[in-house]
Length: 273
Image (tube, rainbow, N blue to C red; front, side, top):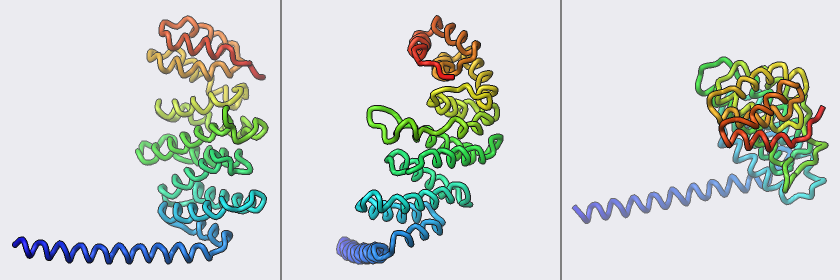
């Protein structure tokens, strides 16, 4: 019995080694073929992928080649890459491909590779708004939250101490107008993500935003949960309306110490018209 088991295991081990060697040769052959493919052709192939795995493999290979190229030579190629990823985010019938492409777009911004970062903000806003806001489907809600979280993470390269972009390249407020329409249609968790996005904008005085945002912000300022009151201080500080200013002053005397501290800190923000 033991001899039979040992023989079987030995045969199994041999077969596994042969299989692994075959797989390694296959991967090496694929990589060799990819290395011979021009970057422009690889980007065309990215447009044709149908699974996240294919997308990751192709984009990773493009990234490796672009990394070793002089900056001036890869500007157009990176723009084409962003266009291909954008097309997947907005047009792919596969949710998993849309989300994976959106993550790659976020990376392009965070790494400072995007020549026009505002374009990627537009894509993520559009993708978030296009998901049915009233949908009760868990997958749809998760997809929308994913786009919003990725959008929030795209603000990071504008912050100190290591900003990848100048403030002149910061996306215009108009880009975020469509998000205001979501505030009254989504659940509390998604609302919270939206609030973190609005709190990243230097000012929130455009009527297209404040007409919807201010009433919700005032409700949050009176919420029984102190965490809601703490979060909303960052939004109120960016709205120049008298109601926002008065409410923020009230929060400076909030019974919760974390809320008071947050309100006192944001009151030092310069008000922008």
